[in-house]
Image (cartoon, rainbow, N blue to C red; front, side):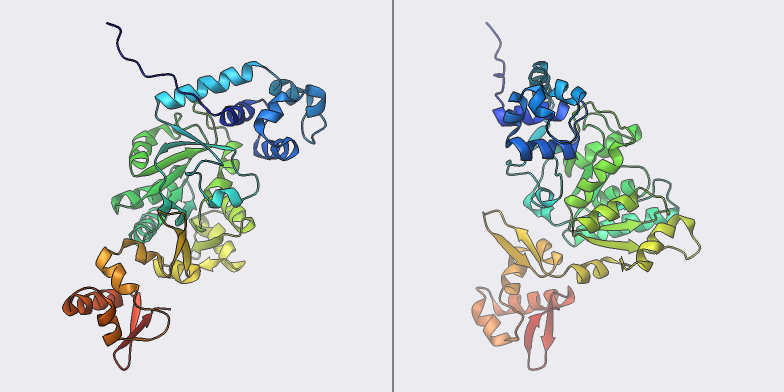
Length: 378
């Protein structure tokens, strides 16, 4: 008897073409975007003769020759098959799981390789970045901030590097929260190698993401390119312990260019390890000491729901409420609401409503006003 075998998967033509285009020699995010804008689709790009490709700014003879190489599609097909075997998803911008905020940046990745799962709640993400050679103070603050933000409902995003990045990921994992690692290498080529186990934990409690093919080695020039993705998927970025020449400052600059919030956590005034953070604060970046500083700066946030529409939450803390707490909170608005009206509106026992109001007040989601009425917390 012939053993059952899984059928060979079929990949959409445009996805295959996008992967093939990304594999062409000399093609980076800017040239991919320029070619797609010029010709419309990746399939159309691959159909162009060499002399037509050379009319696009930035395309030289070597790159044009690589794009017209008929073996490029075979290489892309083999890569997609390997991804399928390794349970690595390949997302283009039309895929429902492609991060919505990432589409908004300049030169977003045309394809993302994902190991793990992305959830709608990951749109509420904060990046934490900093020095690889951090001090004990920086490591402690990164883990503390990541854990607190995770408990408040944020997904923590970082780059899996040594130092602050690893501390941020671990803080999120230990608190039971979600975390995303954005890699400069392929998701099959974990760097640094001693973070292989950490990467596996992240893929179980979030996802590894990269625009690089599976076996791409971590080259120096790919790290600054990767940093735009870290900031791109986030609402804002927190810099913890960055020297004046730290790569984390590139992530902060990308965030500012993308219209994201940038925060810096101060260190000792004479610490060279935090000199870059202090420069950011001097230049007007928001100083943060704890999660409340971050929450107050971000304000009300639109968050995708499981349906096609989105809902607006006034604080990320609302994401971790149970059904009963959410129901009671929904009956409190930005205008004062009397206790009697809340009791009539809620479909539960009065004692449970009163206890839940107390919990919501303790969590600083609502305020009690004179006359026994309640209002949403500012």
